Image: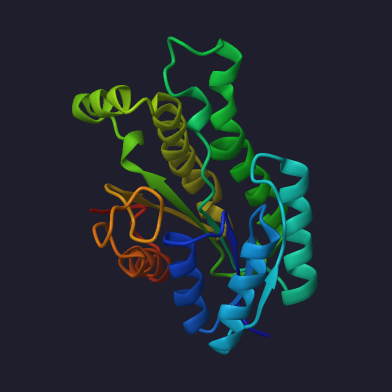
Length: 230
């Protein structure tokens, strides 16, 4: 039975490259996103490359649907070896001084609550795997830097920046909490737009394959918690 990675927040760019990389390394792949047509296309593309894959529709901000997606992936592919959390959420609170205070919590539904739901649902499998892993995509808006903070304010991505910072802290906490269970937790911090996504212009941007290689390197080495790609 192959190892299994569940990619949450599937779409063009990072998650597609990670799915292809881990699939090429012998993993079966569960794809999780809200859009079923996108999932179907992703599954077919992986199968065309000889990768066993399945679609698991879910909303990354809804812990109940995330738990159901993890259960579906386990049922169809087998015990889960790794989770790749690539889900995006944060556009609802662009200017923290102009948004209802309750709306500032919305980005945390994906960055924190959704990620925790996935980790908790997969944890028995991750512990049993012996090389279980939780791999998290993050963005440089989460870094503590006056320059980054100024950019987030100017671009009105303040909610995303706060959520990314919380996610960065969560990675460190989960790494400490789960290391004695043999579960590796790591993060790739991306400083720049990724080719193939709505943030990249033309041929500009970071190749998704570079980020996928960074994730693979973290997973195999299991020593460093963080990597940064720019």
